[in-house]
Image 1 (tube, rainbow, N blue to C red):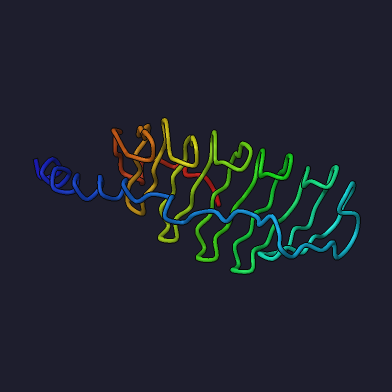
Image 2 (image 1 turned 60 degrees about the horizontal axis):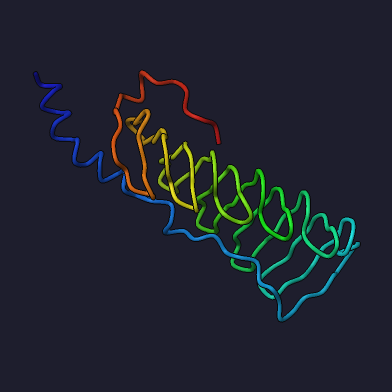
Length: 175
């Protein structure tokens, strides 16, 4: 009976934790340039480093566009490292914000889309699907003391799920 009352009292706090979203930390877009200079290598077709007004890109190029593996480092400290296609983040990649939060997953032409992990600075982790840069679909949400297995998100809003004690769930994804 005590466990039931305890769970009932903590449910509102747990739901509030689910509403902490990953959109407060927006991904920077690469500037299309007032200042642009190829500072090393081949920035047309091959591997090269391009200096932009907002940061530096190091990686592969095709027809003057970022294509293949590459890393963009913004002047504010944000970093994206992963796959590019037609000058956009596309495929698997990792975006780390200067505050320490991190997204690791799929992109589709610059947009978080498909499966991905979002690591909050407070240690909370969202593992699930994304659509148009929003949490959308079935996901697991790991807090310090608990985990919500099979939670459902629609357009970044938590809709439903089943919370269980973290001690009984040993499959939290690694960093």
